[in-house]
Length: 75
Image 1 (tube, one colour):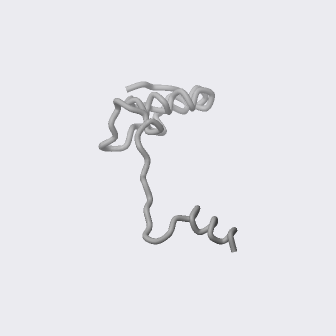
Image 2: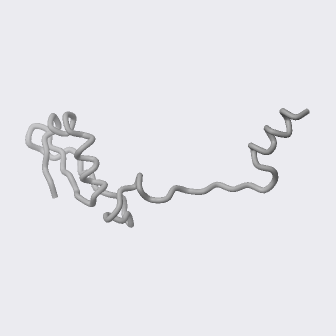
């Protein structure tokens, strides 16, 4: 568990959130008192950042949007 001040968190938020994404827990202090604990969500794999994991694939029945647009252009 890593502890940072609120000012440090504001300055290095991007890097600290990358650390959380890697599985680390961060406690944010204001005036020496803990005000927040930032940790990865339950069940998240720490071996791979979320932006590298496959995203959700949405599918619907019927013609694809590109086919519908091409058919509309032909008429």
